[in-house]
Length: 362
Image (tube, rainbow, N blue to C red; front, side, top):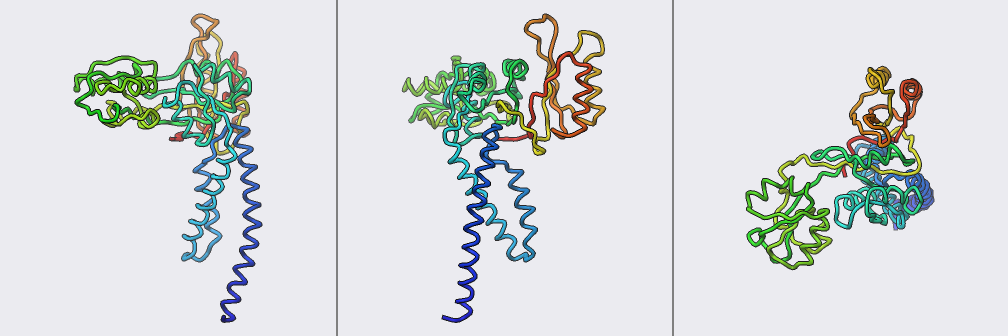
């Protein structure tokens, strides 16, 4: 064996020994990262952070021929880190409203892939499970591009103690499902949630199908699976078809390609992280002319871009409202603190409901 080969192997062995110790040290840090994410109800995958790590760390490699290999090494290392965190996530309880196969169930699985998804009968039960500690976080719909805001979720956030720590967008694709062996020609009647039937109205009319309403798309799919009837179809997601053993007969049958539902992640602890570049404010104003305009002008005065404004009636006060506002801008800095102080002087009540990274698709 040549001296050069022996020398090379000696260097590799020494480096491998150092890298093994550093690998353990890095994975211990991953444990700390997971503990933080669990406490604040954050998903394990943070693509922006991973992209930034790759961009920053690859700058250490001056040899352009090796830089690409190092970037692949970093990607593999972070994939291992995620896998380790997912293993630790086993037993992390996430509340949602509905049944297996419903869009809330799908959204929950995409945000928290290895979590224990806990079904609840309604939004309040899911919310309360986090308040009482039986679940770690709740995933609830807050807005649909087709049907508008989800008022019950907004009311729970306004009156309750949980914070928004993320808002994620799930694009909804409706599909025609049938039992194995069925074809589109066999179908005579379709069943689904009224909103799904409405979204697919043109398709249903063109096919000449009769319709039957169900409480949600997953319930419709289960009904078809249990019926073993080739003439009965369901309108639901591909994931729902897999759960109930149904065949996808036709895909993307909803008339609007822009059908997206936004889901909020709610937890007991409020996140203040620079990555969270948007905030949610909820407030009431005095029942007099110009009150809302004054509040909005203060937000603009401090340079924040208002991306959403909703109003909801106060339950205990007829003809009075609270307002839900999303703003773009730093979550935790001196400028925002000044804005909050000034807003509190013109608002009867003011709540910083949470923060999130905008446009997080799942």
